[in-house]
Image (cartoon, rainbow, N blue to C red):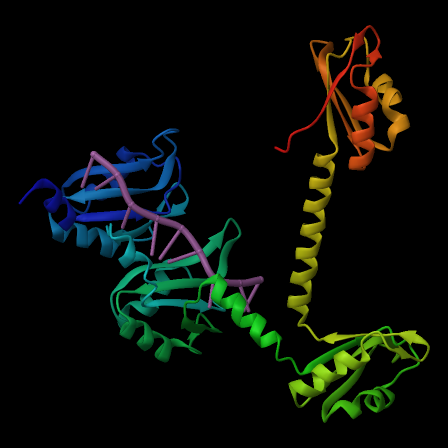
Length: 370
DNA sequence: ACTGAGCGG
């Protein structure tokens, strides 16, 4: 048998490694399971930074098996390691066959507890409770070797209680598949959200406005603790067609002298997620907007300070930021100016490039995107 | 709250 074939029989993949874990440390640890032939922490070829995984090659298959059985999820440098048989065939790793998703996990459920609850259904290739520095995130993955084991686990474990909490167990879905599913579910909505109808509205009147689109299951004007309308409410229809018609015909219409908004009702978490995403989006746009109108000013006379620079450019528009680069108490001969619009920045470039500020002509250019 | 990461000499 050649060397490569021999390694493969007794090779373990060690994942989720902390960056400070060394080969020595792994050698010490795994030698407790039996004689170790070699260990390699994989690193980026160029930077030599660890890639977060390693191989441990045992001389004996039984020792590798023992390590897998007894050392999986042991904590090194504060982080649980994840052990698997080395599997170099990427197709086998990524097929997705037998992969199971678990959620609604109690925070007290750790990797080992999870493993104990699922290992009886078949051979597990890899499992993991997702966590951050706050601890468990309440969901996990168990990848079985066979689909039949996964089916069995789903059948037996979905709805079961682990550490006083009922868990949800189902086939794993990729993020893309899941998003598509959510979108298609959302497109068949039956619950409608109405806002901006003022406070002269109650359930009965709302019912009166919306019942012509179809049968309603519930109509509710949301109120505060004193019973006063909050200006919004929900109408639940018995069919998507009715809900869709209500949105199409009522959105933007005048009710009690006000233009109302009528749309698909979202769950609170969904709404929050959307708002959060919008906020991130506008933040990104704002950053991009600022980058687009940043000017580099070179060949600066080193007596010119930020105030003078701002003054020299203020006639072209509103300046959000001015900076003169400094080193050792004097200017380094360049700086930057942020305008609030691209037009202003462009005008500043055409008008000021080559013009004298102090004793030297300015050299101005639009800053490159980073 | 909420569907991953992962393979060398």
